[in-house]
Amino acid sequence: MTTNTTKNETISAISAFFKDFQTAHEKEPPKGPKWDQKKPNQISAKHFLLSSASSIPPREWLYGNHLIRGYLSLTVAPGGLGKSSMLLVEAISMVTKRSLFGFAPVHRLRVWYWCGEDPLVEIERRIAAICLHYSIPPEDIGDRLMIDSGREMPIKLAESNRNGIAIIQKTLDQLVATIKKEKIDVLIIDPLITIHEIQENDTTGMNTLVNQLRNVADATGCAIELVHHTSKAGAMASDDFGIYASRGAGALIDGVRSARYLSRMPEKISAKFGLSAKEAKSYFSVNMGKANLAPMDGATWRRMIGVPLNNGKSFWETGDVIGVCVPWTQPDVLEDVTAEQIEAVMAAIRAVDVPPTKNERGQRWVGYVVADVMGLDIGLTGTSRADRTNDQNAARAKVGGMLSQWFIRKLLITEDVSDGRTGRTITIVRAAEPQSK
Image (tube, rainbow, N blue to C red; front, side):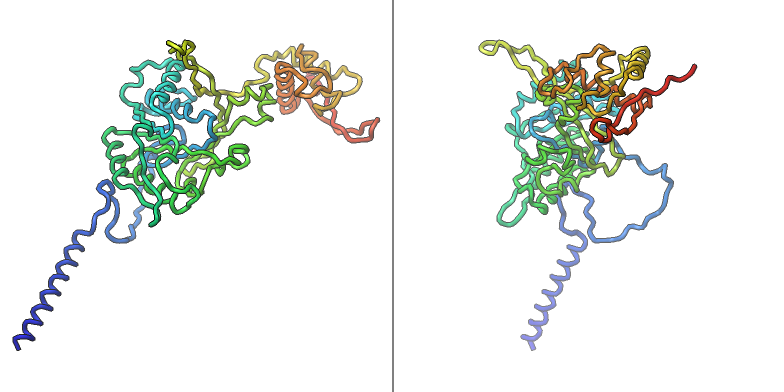
């Protein structure tokens, strides 16, 4: 009897222990990261109550239609194009509320630029050159710009090991704490590859990293700009690939809400403005590749120029010339053309015995009539681009631009006719009859 009583008491004690253990953990479930306070204890469905649309908080766009508070954004570009300078100009624009690229933020922002590749002094050179070119004094920046280098302060958020993907929670906690302490509005990570050691083609791994960065943006209310490189194939033809010129898994593109890509100026555009291949390397376009939260913007153009720091000394007397990104707008080919010149061109086209043709490669191209009237040297008939000077190619591009505008405005009209010599169909150009006054 004693033995059975003891046994029953032991079983009761064990049952009571596990019951107390379960009750305690139901009341206090295991906690996640200290900065993540939105993980629910259980899965539940939230009932929707329709309220007035005007009562819903607006999206907090911090810079154009690209950076938004609490979300990830992405910039993809080939190496050596000028993306870092562009990002720093944007950072200066945000902290000063200056319209350096045609628009300004609604208020001055606090920006943290972290570069994983270059030393701190190189970043300082770039910022100094930007401020020299745009005439920005130190007091306009104040304490709102923070810069750091991965060479001095590396940041590693994730890595691959034999067990799969490992998130470095301590580093994530420190990142969140710093953003909150400094009240940072925008964090720029340039480039993304320097904060992780995951295979870029690993979809699951990159998705895990993006989710962690999204949690950081959500927990801090910070907009995070991720900078990424294109693949080798994408760098050669980024306009063909679009945003998917991005290197590695598509999980990165899928995980952001705004993505843009930078493209080198193609030959068809540089030829239009008479730029040599060397000159064209200084120009690139900024194109929206993904815009979940705003309408897709058209491409804008940027140009890299050299700005001397005048910091020569000792063995380096000439000092540094630093590339600075500036806005560029395609010139208006009709800006300096007068109404009298246009009428003179139309009269000359009407006066020729044999109508000129639309084909630029033809001996009777209408552009030769335009160039003759306008006094422009576009090179001899039949010469190739390589045989002409840069000035001649630029003049030829100007003539082509004027013709395009006149076709659009119906000042010039085309007609398909049979060539009496070859029997082939050719397109001739006629000037529209002048409007009667």
